[in-house]
Amino acid sequence: GVCERVSGMGANPAAHVAAIRAALEKGAYGETSLENALLASAEALQGVPSYGMKEVVIVYGSLMSTDRGDIRETIEMCKNEKIRAEVIGMGAELFVLKSLANTTGGRYSVAMNEIYLSEMLQMNLTPPPTAKASVKPSLIPMGFPTLKVLKEPKPSYNDGKLIREGYECPRCNAFLSEVPAECVLCELSLVTSPHLARSYHHLFPIPLFSEVPTESVGGRTCAGCFTAFAGAVDLALRCVRCGEFFCFECDAFIHESLHNCPGCENLGIDVSSVVRMDST
Image (spheres, rainbow, N blue to C red):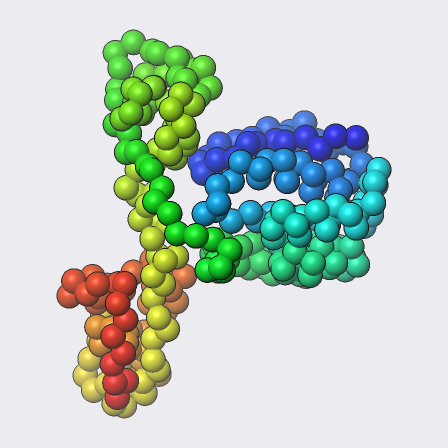
């Protein structure tokens, strides 16, 4: 059999969700082949530039794999191509999946329930660390397209659909329906400022806050939700950069969702420099 690609490489989550929903409506068919999936992934990742990372996340629900060739050779090929495989099993633990993850430097876990499955998927949202010896620093040309609303519909260059609202490439003036994307004419990477902001926190993550007993905080309130620490909150957490105090709920929200410290933002502290402060 042949592995079918439901959605191509891209950074638009709405397009991927729509493609997956359309595939679910058709239903699953054919036999599971881990070898075909890895070969298709390796082919899709051939065009990744030298500064990029080749990573595959596999959610595997079958208890077998029907392969035409030797799966061990395919796993070795992934290792030579520097493709890292993160594997999440939906059933019993399989030796071939564990071998794939260990050989390529990834992780293999088995989802016990829906909550654990969600946690395993969330762990793969953070980009893996990059080895300095394997990736050389280089400048990446990027363009910021202009959003335009037309009076009459115009076909987009990337999918050919008639649209009134789209983005114009600053280099070649190509009309595209969505960003982030790569211009189909000049191959310039097109992004918007919110897209860069979403990936910025991976470069400069917020350090863990230090725990402080509420008795030493005094009459202070949480800098996030303004909840008084006396009585209502047993533990306060202090930012090591700006010195503001936060409750446990705000600490979790800042590190897991917001990725910005409100206290540091108010004081205008440069997030690329970490200044350790006394936690007492």
